[in-house]
Amino acid sequence: MKLTKSKVMKNVSLAVAAICAVQFSVTGIASAQVSTAQAASSYVAKADASGLEASSYYAEVTIGQPLTLKVTYNGRPLDGALVSWTTSNSSIATVRNGVVTGYKTGMVIINGKYNGDSIRIRASVIKEPTLEASSTSVSLKKGDTKTVSLQYGGKALSGLDAYWVSSDESVATVKRGEITAKANGTAVITAEYKGKSIKINVKVSGNQSGKLEANESKISLKKGEKETIKLTYDDEKLAGSKATWKTSKSSVATVSDGVITAKAKGTATITAEYKGYKVEIEVSVDNGSSALLEANETKLKMKKGQEKTITLRYDDEKLNGSKAEWKTSKSSVATVDDDGVVTAKKKGTATITATYKGEKVEIEVTVGDKGSSLLEADDTSLSLKKGDSETITLTYDGTKLTGSKASWSTSKSSVATVSTSGKVKAKAKGTATITAKYKGEEVEIKVTVK
Image 1 (cartoon, rainbow, N blue to C red):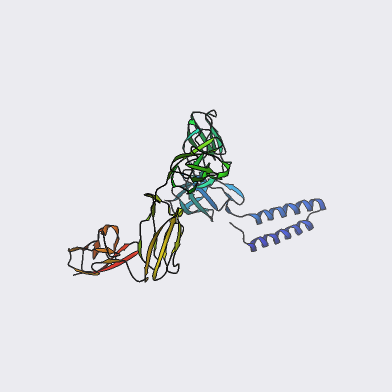
Image 2 (image 1 turned 90 degrees about the horizontal axis):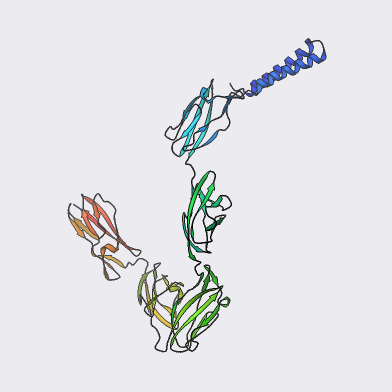
């Protein structure tokens, strides 16, 4: 039974009264002092009494790992089997004799009663955390390294957090998650954390692969043209000046710090070398006419706010838009970014120009009002009888569009449905709206079923 503040004050007053009584009724100062201390001790103990208490009023229970609740009564440990326990949701967790067992994730309230007192403990049931690795199978060449990262319970771990060990350090070693291939063979790397472990199978074969790479392996130039080769080493940019360059035929092509200059018709091989690694670029020089730069569109019809990407080809090969230089004749009407993405700004016309290796291609852009639509349907309203069906025909920018290329939906499938090809079927009496969408445009068809 818990004591209220008023009861505590009352007991303290009684203790004081008892002390005074002892002091005046017992002969001898020493004996009076002893009795006084005993009396005070007795009443203070009563004042500290707190009834049924839990060591903690929040518990975290892992599924598969029952948790025993610790309780006391009047400050002394109490056997949980003597307490009457209940749970707010037995599908999440049950409690028996003070032992909580979790079954699925969630939150429950555990209630305990003893000798008229009660306690409430909030329990959270969680899944048992698992240890996971970014890779469980690794193939390396001798001298290569690879770092494996870990997660525990969905949270990233530092390589320092876990204990790492290799089954065969002559094949592969590991330090803080970084695996180093030492010799051909196989080894198992084990990571351990909080009693959990995970294994990474490592296979080492052959010698270390070359780390030096060029952005181009084959280029075509015409006499007088220049091309800069970009290098990476260990996936990081490498300044051309740091590598050693040479050409197999300086009469055809020369190279300096990665800049290739076409001298005469023919072929040559340019070689870049860095830290023992080599990469070759095949160069073809032609004295003939300029290669043709082409765009997938030469005329565009757009509406305000719409975006379209222009794709390019150079010498009949696809060209990354970012390699060309783009500009617009009127940015107030249409803009273009470094990748060839055209954005319609307002009604009017503009010319988009792409330039690459001295070649140019122009795209005429016409921007209409925002309200105008390039997507149209042959019917904007249909009247059907239950069971009837009809296929909607679409056009985009004046050209017939295959229905399956559009995205179709109905406002009320109980009245009318629509297939992926635009076939409308009447289901029941009423009205529904069929919507077709394509390239950001949409058109609606009102359907009435009689």
